[in-house]
Image (tube, rainbow, N blue to C red; front, top):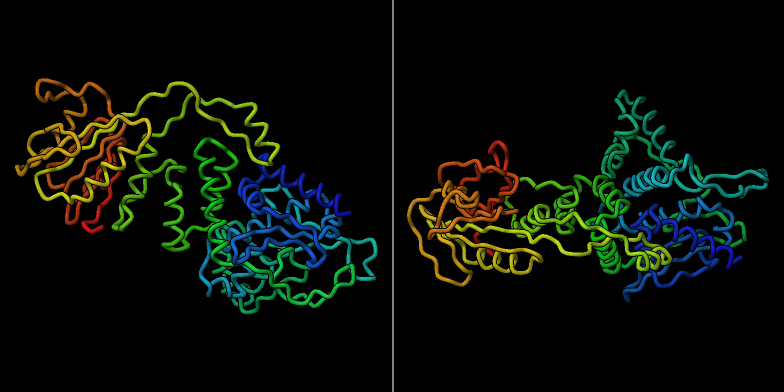
Length: 459
């Protein structure tokens, strides 16, 4: 029975890697020990203080489920761990209403992503239920029905189901509007950690089953999984891209921490959008993401047969890779020397451009005139500012020292206080404006808009 359960588990994990859930596939690849045991009634992921992770699963339980049911359970457990990573606030996670909201949200996603019409079932555990089967876990439809009826009794208008389940925090907020919230009666939740006073089919008293989930280990594991899946998505893996966008969408409005987390992973680059102007200290992350979206290479993709076969055998999606020559991207960095530009901004830009692969960089300083320079050289300025000269030079119309700029830039970075007559480049989508403290961020309101962000004068 243990061997049969193991084969079923391995088959499900292979299916995850082939496209059903890239996040779950990577997460279980990080669990180096998969342990069959009757010490738990269902399945769980443990994360101990020594940094190790393990998947525990009851082989009897896995054989009571069908193949798709095992997939549902493992997807549910993987999603629980990612929720704990994303929603780290202890007060939030200790709220039983949020616990219920997480169950509803996770099962809602699992049912749709795995293409199921209902929860998995196991043989009924009561004597009167011989030959019958009962569901495992919290049914989001039943919770929604209870929510809808409760609000109508209060004379309030419930949200439609699609709006109710739109994000994790939407579910949480709507459940808090209820007067009487109780978990629908089910066989038992697939996730461990609560009280289950009943008995298993094999006679073991369950009691409370809190398994270790060390916060630091969960944070490290969740971060590693999301980073690796994001890399796969940016390389063109459609399953990884779809799952990450769904996960990010379902954690929308989760606060500044989540916004920073997704920003550091490159979500805006994945979405192909430029972040809006905001005055925050992480403008470097913003610029890196915006620049990546403008310099990303999208051609000469090939499928490596041998490497792809190995990845598929390990339960991961095969990746497309780039081969052959790629066109060098051209970046033009223009620095306003008419006023005081923060030295650390220039130093950081030099480092960023120098560490960006496949980029040919050109540097300008400008006030009333345009002067090419090499990073490290002294630059002089102090006169009036004229953006149009930079536009004319970048578009090949202005000669400097008898030469025109003959290459069309893929991205132009303008570091300036913004105080000069406004301009409209021929390709505004390629221009990125870094506005220093106290400057005019007019490019953000320009039509058509251009990427614009304030940089901070302190480190």
